[in-house]
Length: 323
Image 1: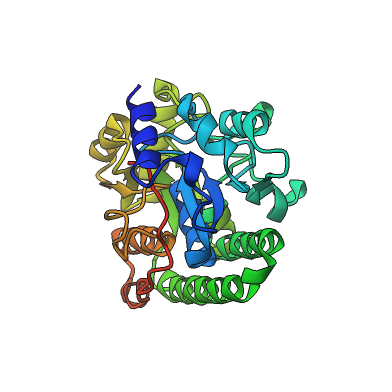
Image 2: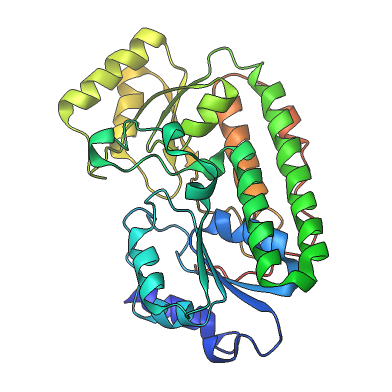
């Protein structure tokens, strides 16, 4: 009920979905906050972007409230991550979208099936690949390219503006990518043990190793046997730090840290942007810069190159982020 109230309040604060197109802007509905940020940065002031998944919500288990159907029904373009992340939202969008509205699944567009990663949180037997492409700057750029193409197809007169938004996002993402390459070379052992495996594609592209994830595919607590195995692994490899979530505290990870002497760092975020909407750090770049600084420093590296990447100073992102 709280989700429904929050979502309805977000729409009403700006006039509600019924008059969303009165100002001539293309109406775009998105799902998780990092994707909302990417779309808003590329789209600029020619689009009106509304996110559906409240920040701080488990996007894998999120069930859209009834009020989401009305928001989806007025969209000209619906952008989801895909890779089976938001199946309930995608189904609701299919049932309620306008006939001429298009649903774009970014992950399905940029990641061939043969490149899907199955892992601790996403075992192959369940048929759902790891969907967290946006935590990899290289894939984030590809997301932005698809967004530019789809916005330009829906609004050809805005192509120059969308090209400019893409160029701006790409420059920032590439700067972060290069800084992470530099910072990564200072990390003695690039081993990640996290509450949830949100960095599988990043690890593959940047030479890190994912040791495991506390949160299994059922999103319940791991079994004692699984915890014991991870404790042994952390001890054997002398992992200096393990990573939890600021949004979803993990008693198991805290226990594992005490049992092994590894530092428990509980400030990583998958899709909950730092700060508040309108703040420079409340962006895809702000999210990933903060995460990378946390990872590098906790594992004994020098994150100064990552810290030097400037946050956005533009006002292109005027999206509605449900909180």
